[in-house]
Length: 268
Length: 302
Image (tube, rainbow over all chains, first blue to last red; front, side, top):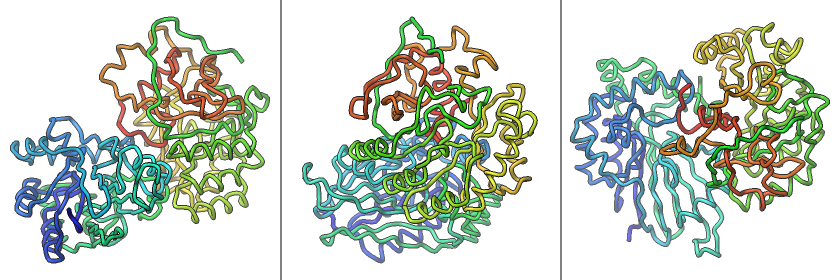
């Protein structure tokens, strides 16, 4: 049974951040590494991600982006309704689709949409958006504690780990003695490696969970050569708006999906 | 107020998957305005649905926690007509995120200060959805009433001054302009009025109530059939994940208040049953996604 694991989401083609994170994880030492999906989008050279994932033995699940690529869908299923968001989402998806080899796209189609494991006394459920839907956004400011408890009850989990929003967060939830759950339960958005979290820094994030025996959650910042990534994005003619996010840490696109609190924290 | 016509043809039934969104018709059909396109014909004289008491809201909130409700919405009529709206919203923010749908013409600084304080001390967002239907004052006021454009802009400025980022919801009343162009004209207008990062949502017309008279009613073929739900993501329909509390009981959605069988029960416990889509307004929801939500999960095409 695992006692200490690392998790990340949203690589978004950022193979440089991925490499930096994997080295850091190896240095810290964990039992297993998990990726919660969305290998593509946003950054350059999608195919550079996969060898790293395989070399480090990362256990993966499928994100909405990966599902779209595997199924040859016309868009990423991100669900944007704002035309500004959609404009950039389409550019990003088209680039990733055209630059992801068919074998890699087929591999993305083999990934499960969730994983279950035990960490100490905790039953973990790993998913991309939410346990019920791959592309559901669970934002910290628009997800009630009662709803998270309902998810834990209905999906028989003590800890639900997700990504998809691009913003890490953690909430402790009350247990449910009637259902034999642990004394406390947790929801953890493990963050993403692909782009900063709209905080004006260039850092990206992954998460370490440890059952010691109480669950410990550590959000770990990752530094990487963001100037090099930006240069490569420019060479690949990706939008300047995406490059600005890598260089400044502020989201410049796909902002309309953000709820009020998360939107106000950003610059735009 | 006439009840909505029921389609006699075979209509599919949609069952609630989970009560994600709990709506409160907090001021019923009472509004300080009388917009010509209102789909439930709200006005200062329409008291078909009345105010919900704070006690009844509390009762519903307690039940909502047991049910695992994710988000809360307050609508009307005009919610700020309710004398206890602010403490009700402050209390609700202890339990989950809140959205208030308002015309923003009755806002007071002391209310907004109190709401901003409550939001800052809650993990949850307080969203305001402000109705405004044209970027041009004359066109807007032809629908919403004389002087309403200016009053609404003043309300938007008040919200911005108190740190909120209102979502401006625009009913697509002028169908000669595309939703895309309407969106960008609104962004331009709002920026010119000092809203530097405007949030805009274009809404399709619901051709019922006053709008059926102002514009047109639904055509006979504008309805949802069982075949249309094959391979359709039911989560796009509001009735799949929402219910609305009124002073007359629990209804299936905030749009069908004039539908005879849309009252599903006395309270939340009895109001969670399935619903047959026997009304043409369901066609708009089908086409455009869960229009009542702040953001839908999937893009829908116009």
